[in-house]
Image (spheres, rainbow, N blue to C red):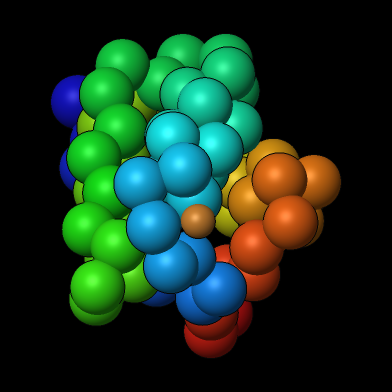
Length: 69
Ligand SMILES: [Cu+2]
């Protein structure tokens, strides 16, 4: 079990949280996603480590940005 906290910028409401949750949740192996809109912290639990590029692409496609890395 892997749990990583990412920082996503650009979220401002519950709709944004749902969009990011859906985008990352759709990646293979993801078991749970929890989003804090105010801080931009997105906690992702997965069976195996996720390729950072997959996470970045999912967030980009949803219209947000993965901070750092
Ligand atoms: Cu929003």
